[in-house]
Image: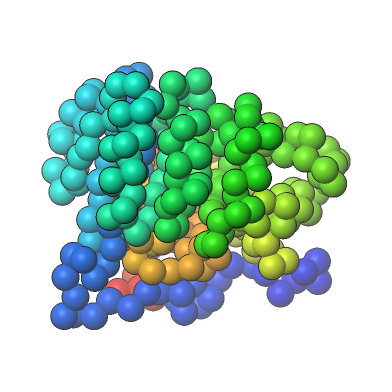
Length: 296
């Protein structure tokens, strides 16, 4: 614990957060992750999130998306299940309602434009009914456009949602929220929003901050400019959702995902350099990152 009240994430801390993995387990033992992500012009976000979720150790990963994205999933991740996200909101919502009944965790947002016809209805459904929830990217921007309706829903959840904004998304979603000032330090603002929404906030920056409603704040102090590229957050979101599916609670899953994602980034930068490494390289190093943090 630092003298500022912020806990720095360490390998030892994260090691103790690993979920049980009995050798007698089967795919149902390790949970099902539902990923609503991707769009016609951004299928790669779903591919990245799906790959990280598959590497997380969860039993099943299902991608809920448009036809072009599902084609990309087929080509890159044949282990994933697929469900079509197409048509009018009423039909999409009915299908999604059936999918979340079988899902232990849900991720929504990567690669979906904030003005997508279905994103706000789906987000509202997931906030109300998903067992565990990660909200990222386009879903965060959509929520920022409809704060009066969406933000109160987070407070009603039994299990805290995890929101994963970068600094720009955080500014949009926190603007006008009572008590949060533009000049608040990032960890202070993140904690205020966590308490306001009764949600875990993963504020992505060069040093990512994790704030939880109970008042704890964590920081990953390993900086790596190689992660400052579009797609890195999609990998983090998929990894986080995959960990949640395995039964870890949101606070621990957020800390573990941030630390393991960071370790994978450092390993990628050692091999490729920070300038040339890509978010798609991270999956290559997740196995070694898990081992480094003591996960089997």
